[in-house]
Length: 120
Image (cartoon, rainbow, N blue to C red; front, side, top):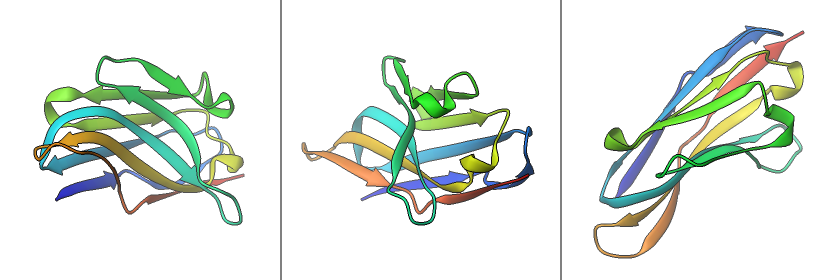
């Protein structure tokens, strides 16, 4: 069993900042990638940013230059610093972890999501 727990969402005015945190724990032998996705009402879940164990990052075009993803390999933790927030960033943000379990297979696990609301 692996648990993925997010924190840090909330309500912020446009132009403001928030920092999301996500920690994965449990039967993890090796973490491959951790990342953030988001889903606004009536839309499909989309990738926001992810980071590999080696530190390579990937961002959606909509957030480049405003969001920064970082990670702590020792803690299986990932952070998302969100600056210059816009109303269109409003969504539920989900953390994803791709890892090799202690029993061998590779899995994807998701957190329950944290709401980010940006008011205009």
